[in-house]
Length: 407
Image (cartoon, rainbow, N blue to C red; front, side, top):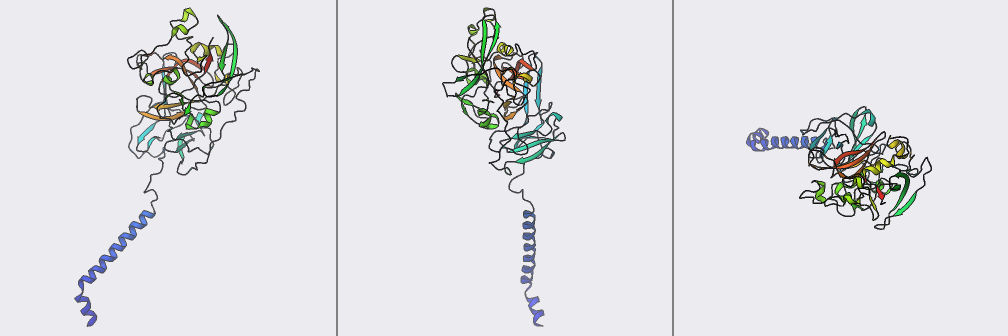
C-alpha cells in the first residue's frame, strides 16, 4: 500500500524521469553522429569526380601543365593553379585551351574533366588552395591538399647541369647586370644580315627583380617565379613579367592599347637600324626591362636564332634540358606562364601552367585583332616541334624575356 501510494502521489516525478531519459538519449545520439563526421569544421578539397556542387562552367579544349614532381608536391606557394590559356597564332587564327573548371567558395577546381594521354601521370597544382590533381587513366584525380602535405616537402627539381652544354661546341660569354649583380651566360652568333655581322643574346631568361606572389600588382624591379617558387627563377627559367613591365610602359598598358588615352606611349621606330623597316617593329631595339645597352628580343632576332640550324623544329635544337638538344647553344627552357585573368573575361585568376610544354617570350608590339582592342601583346612561342613569332597573349599574363645586345 505504501509503494502504491508513492507512485500515485508523485506523477510529476515520474514525468521528470521519463523526460530525463529522452534528453539523455538525444544528447548521446548527437555526440555519436558528430564523432562520426570529421568534416564538420572544414570541408575536404573537392574531388573532380564530385559533380554535386552548383557551378558556372567554362568549356573549351582541354590542356594542362605538367608539374615536375612525382608524388610529392610543394605547399609553400600562395598562388592558384588550374589550367587555361588564350592565344592567337601568327596566321590570325585564334586558339585557346581551358580545362573545365567550376567556381565555388573554395575557388577554381577541376570538374570531373578528362586529361589527354599526353599528360598521363602529370599533375596540376592549385596552390592558393593547396590542391593537387594527377592525370590518371584519362581523368584528373584529387591527390592531396596542403593540410596533409608537410611544408618541408619538395618537388623533384630538374638536373640543370646540362643547361649550358652545347652539342656544337658553342662557347659562352658572361654579362653582369649592374643593377643587381646577376651574372648571365651570353652567346654570340654570326648572322651576316645586311649591316649586322653578329648578334649577342642572353643564353638564359632575364631574372631581374624581387619575387612577388602571383596575383600581386607588378611594380618596378619585381618578378614572378613559376609556382611562386624562387628555385625556378634562380635556375635558368628566369622571371615571369607582364607585357607592360617588360616594355617599361605604365601598368595601364596591360589593359589598354598603346597610343590610347590610358596608355599614351609609342615605340621609337627610329631605333630600328634599317631604313626600310623604320615604320615597323620588326627590328626595333626597345630596351624595356633589359639592362642598358641591351633590348628586348624582337621578332626578326628570333628568326636569326634559326639561321644555320638546318631545322625549324623549335625546341628540338634550342634547349637540352627538358627538350631535344642544345645544338644552337641557346639553352631555351619551356618555362610556362602565369595567368592572372580568366581567358575570356577580366575575372582574376592566379594560375601557373604549361611548364615543360611551351616557352613564351614577350616581343615589342601588340597582336593586331579587331576583337581584342590591343589587350594582347605580341609573343614568340616555342614548342618542342615549332616556333611562331606572331602569337598573342593577354598582356596581364606573366611570360619570359630574352635580351639582345644593341648593335
